[in-house]
Length: 201
Image 1 (cartoon, rainbow, N blue to C red):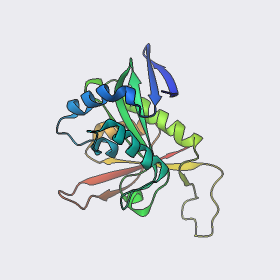
Image 2: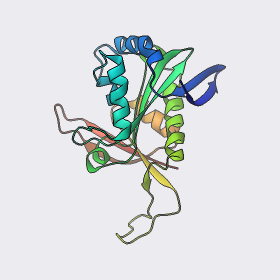
Image 3: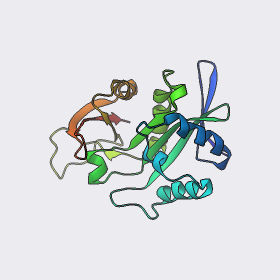
Image 4: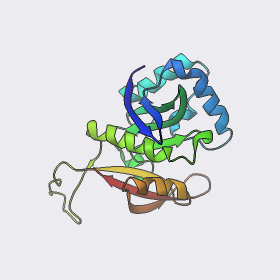
């Protein structure tokens, strides 16, 4: 297992790693803790009854293999602490029209028993750092620029979306200097308003 990033917070050490077989038991405990709540990011909804097959499927998403309609290539990261899986994030390598409308570049979630400790902000910061290393993001243009305009320097827009009624998620995004860009609505089931933020880096 390779550690992608290691960080200290409040005297504790946290590692961001790629999905690994050594966390199978912790992954299953994480899923059990979630119970019936909506799971984020989407990789938590994949079939993990065969854990080796699950890891292979996550790897296929990173390589852009057998992607479902509307999906794009994406990398999954796990936040760990003392050999326990405590958070999951997914970074889309690019946006298509569907995920630019609703979804954005980054989805993440924290294990219920570890919430309320600022770990969502920590994980989002780590993933943003990884996005910058990989040059993931949309070019920045001046306001009202025409179709022939050139991007402003090397800055990138990272899109991060959440439900507008989720105050904790909005606070998390603002904590990494996310700025509200616009609103939209879901169109399946009960309609909910989506707040779309942009982080410039």
